Length: 448
Length: 50
Image (cartoon, rainbow over all chains, first blue to last red; front, top):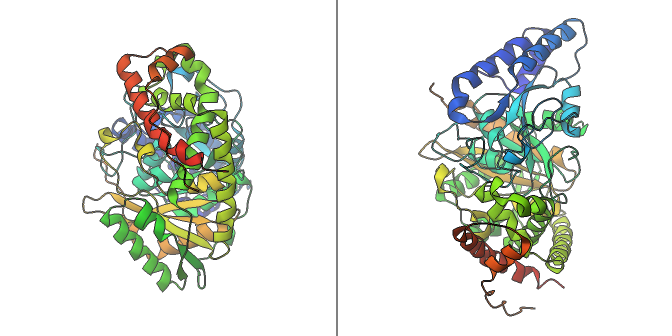
């Protein structure tokens, strides 16, 4: 059994667990199962083993760097890693080997994190799940016929499968929280700007976020601290007595379709929060479609500004999903883009007001359990507004975590949204919930 | 204030893509034209913003 980060680090520090053994355990699982899961675009077996040996020697010599020292991690393949290919999941960047680490990965590496592999991604964080890319799409470890969510698809699958203890993903319209939801793990989109995006292939630079995915909410806190230089994990408390949990009922009861299973799990989770002493209150929030109207023109306009030249040069070198989505950006004019930015500003101000009435805001994350992999439509994100873009639009932190399973054994989830910079409250609430519920005891079973 | 929705855009997507220099099969141009119609709903909405 692969331990959590919180379980591993005290044992790595006192020498009862060796980084070499931990890395080998992850690599053995990858060797046994990644041909089914496709979580990686590349696996760094040799360098990971070397790093693990160096880590064990360093710790034995009394130079323990902190809780991430010796922890095997995966990095989404749009995040640059020095001397390790970073492809963006695209033919356009096959063979691209950066000289430098992305800023956030440099921090994790300096904290002692060990790169186990590069995680599969939708092409440049938008084009997927696609079958016409150099890498087959990642599959959901809970049922290999099902979608992982995206675009941090390999991160969700890799953490759930026990290929690593945590991962770095990116989130522009839900790309951390979606895979975390479908894969039954935890994912945190931090406050805009808290984690640097330098060295990350951009999609929508004013809305791109970098953040962690891990088996538990608590592990997300350790990873956040490594990426952001914050001190959140040590300040978490599972005593959430008096915490004001606002419920954005309008979003999940009216504006967005969610399954009966997801609704039941959400309401059961809110009861757990009440039993833990939190004060659950209804909150009035802006219509979900307003956030969607703000997000869509901005993301498409900015993505087309970045990738338009390559699309005009050789569109068919991209996956059909990527080009069919990004080319819509050619039809978003400057006036519409500016209007969307103004709407974003108004919504951000409105949500700052909302957050004066609660500490965290609760709603659904994905509206259902994971669908079958082949059933995802090109423009699924255009048809209906969902609850994931709002915190990307406003820059608020947002956390998704597992709230149970449906009858088919697929994970269900919910989302908590915090005030800007209030990651500690979000992560405390999530950690308290996980400690009071049984869902972290169940792992996907992969058969070789 | 509510504003009248825009009329459905004339389907000049293929022409526009050609003008941009983007070369794609007709079937795919039709897919993008469909996406453009879906996008229009959100653009109509954002155009209400003062």
